[in-house]
Structures are given as structure tokens and as C-alpha cells.
Length: 235
Length: 328
Image 1 (tube, rainbow over the protein chains, first blue to last red):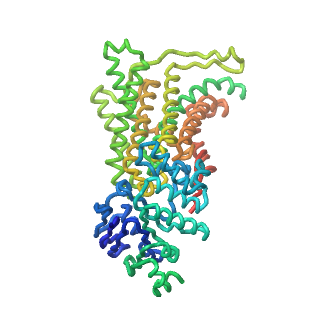
Image 2: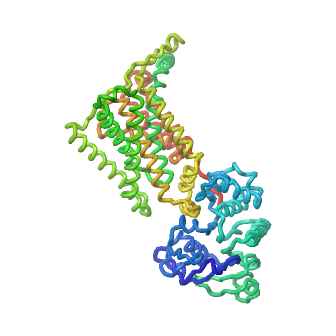
Image 3: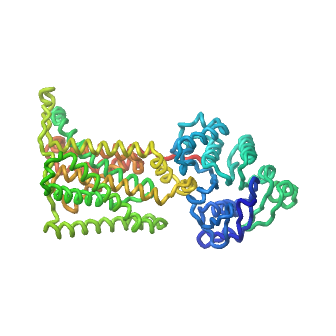
């Protein structure tokens, strides 16, 4: 079953075209990765899906419901979570307050607490840092908090924008393990990465984006073997 | 000279704290809006003034009723405060919706000019209505809480003079403190307060948390303007006579208080307000003493603005403001 369907979207920044007709789909239970170099349009694609950017043409469907150009505070209400590039932790809010914001739309206290325990189970370090300001933590911890915050929404589709950015290899390994684990627990993942090798190795399928266009797509394992990809992204 | 300053200190503190509390609550409105939109809402002083007029009108209306004498004055005050705060709160929300929101993406100077425009409009609208209904834009409300209280501090220690004030001082101080403590609790402990801080830090990411950013901005304007309007009522109770131009200088001072404490910082605004009030009253009581009669009490405003300039030179981020160190 297709959980996310993107049809030929075009997005502009001012007068500059960032996306030139992107089409892709994500099926329930998959890990799909979108790889490409800096400025190719990866983040813009995610932002267009979650509603942070408006698309000019094309359409987006989530669980067969049209969400094209719906604002972000609405798209995130129906089971889709977006972990933005650069983590975007609320720097002067504590870890707990950051997590509470993830569950902003939930009013039941018991549900919030239950989810918070689930996040602490996944990232025990966050429990230790619960009263610390988000901005004072290391990059890896911030990434964990950003993912934890998104999980507070109990999403069916988790969209991650370059979770490995600026992190030490051992932390990246940890984060990718968690992503795989979340997927096994039933969360569909759309992963945007510059770190193509790592992303492709955990993904079921991948799309390669260049200059705002999808230039290649296929199974993760096939894309790793692909000569063009090897040359461009895995060298 | 030092001894003489000590003698007047109790009176200075009482007057200064009351004035400072008024500055502080108005300063909250500036700082909250700045925190969330980086906009200096110059119309905020006029919201305060409008609150003073609405409150005075309500007082005059209520005091005209014969049954009102059966009700304790403090209850009447609370009703007037709640009604006025709701009205000015809605007014602030409306101003944001009509005048600032369409300019959200414009360069920052543009909404600033708009704010100044709104402030002139409010001044003239209030003046027009006041003149139309009472023939004069200078309005005097019923005198309330006029009981004179004297603290016999000279009997405690001969270092002090007696301090005396109207009971309205206590009322203003207590209500202002209640407003500040409640706001502090709201911002720091409640879900919507945290969400407001989240929106102030990063609007896009806040919206990814299902927070409706526009609603939070409206809420910020509502609360800031409600506080400003309520303080207007307190001001009217304390000073009795008001005119449509009281918002300008008081708004300026409250804005100074906000900058003094670190604009965008809630506790900074409270601290800055109290500090400015006390310093101003200290200057009023002691300037001629310190300068051997060259400068009189009427130079207290010079003193207040000189402090602002000094703080800006040596600590531009304000006394409680910290330059934010962000990790990437």
C-alpha cells in the first residue's frame, strides 16, 4: 500500500526553480532514501511534502488524502513527522520541553508520558539530560532529541533530513541502527541523505536527485552497485 | 548627604516599586511581541492608554449605579480589570491581524512604521471619542482607594523618615505582582507557554510540531495587550486623571525597561521595569541633593534615559539578556 505519493511537483524559491517535477512514492513499511549532492533539492522535497514550502504545480497524497500545500501544522496531525535538516532543536527549551512540543497535539497526560518512556527506552541518554537545555547538548544527542521529539507524534511516516550531518562515524552508525529498528517496529521511513552509501545500505529503495530532478531510482542494493552512483556519490 | 538619602529611602522604595511594577507589566507586552516577531510594537503604549480610558469609562458608568455602593470597591476594580483586559486583548489581536500579519515577510522597518501609525490612530480615536462624550479629552475618573496610609518608620529607626501613600499604591503593586507571577508561570510551565517560546525560537520547526504559529502569535498579542490594558486601569486608579497622550511617555519608559532587562526576556522585562521605577523615584527624590540644587526632580526622565544609554553602551544585550550561543 502506498503511504506517500508525489506527482510531478515543482517548487520555487522566489524566482528560482528548486524542484523540476519530482515524482516518487513510498510504500507502507519501507525505508526509502532520497540521495543527492548539496543543493540538489533534497530538503526542498521534504519541505514541500510537510508543507513548509508551497509547491507551484503537482500534487501530494498521504494515505490517499491530498495534502498538497497544506500547512505544516496540519500535515503533522495525520501521522507524518518531519525531522528537519540541522536538527532544529529548540535551543533554550529543556529536553523535556522539546519532547513535550513533539506531543503538542496530544492532550492526554498518560499518553504523553507513555510516549516519553518509549523515547527514553530508545535513547537513554535523553532521560539523563531531561532538564538540560537542548542547545547545550552534543550534535549526536541533539539528533537523538530531534528524532525523539518526532516520535512523540507517534508517526506512521518519519521523514528525516540528513540525520548524519556533522556527526562522528560511530554516532552515525548508532542513528542508522535506530532508524532500522524504528522501521522494524512498523514506521515507514523517508530518509534524505548526502551520506549515500550508508543510506542505501539500509534502504529498500532509493531515488537519486540532481538539479531538482529524479535521475535514477531503484532498489537500494542495486543503486549501491550502480557505476554512475559509485562515481558520483560513493567515491 | 548620604544620611539624607537614607532618610527618604522608604518613601522612594514604595513609590518606585509601584511605578516600577506599572512599567514592568507594560514592558512585558513589548518584550513578548519582540520575542515572537522581532517587532517593536510601538502601538503598545497606546493599548495601555486605551485600557486606562476603557477602565475609567467603566468606573464612571458603574459608580453611577445606586446599587454599586453595596459592593466592595475591590470587587468593582476586579470586574473592570477583567473586562478592560479582555477588550484591549482583543484589540491587540485585531491590530496584529489587520496591520502586522500582512507585513510578516516585509523588511522589519515596514511593520515598525505601521506600529507608529497605529499608535497615532489610537491616540486620535480615543481623543475623538473622549471629546465627543465628555467634551474634554482630559478625563478624571472617580477617586478610589484614597485612604492615606502612613508607615511610622521614624519610630523604628531614626535613620528613616515616615513614608506615606494612598492605599491605591498597595492595590496597584499587588495586582501588578499577581499579573507578573501568573504570566511567568504561564510562559514557563504550561503547554501553551512552552509553545509560545518554541514559536519565538523557530517558527518553521514549531509548525512541524503541529503548532499553529499564527494562533500562537495571536495569543501573544492577546496576552500582551490584555496586560497593557489592565495596567492602564491601574494607572487610572492611581493617578485619577488621564489623557490620550499618557501612552507615549509611559510606553517609552516601559520599552526602556524591556531593553534594560534584555528585550525578548520575560523576567528581564519585569526586572528592568522595577529597576527603572525605583531609579526614577530615587532620582526624583535626590537629584537636587546630589547636584547641589543644579538639577531638580523634573530631570528624572533625563536620568532614566541616561541609564538606558549607559546600559546599551556597556551591555547591549540588556542586564538579563544573554547573547545566544547556538550550536549547529
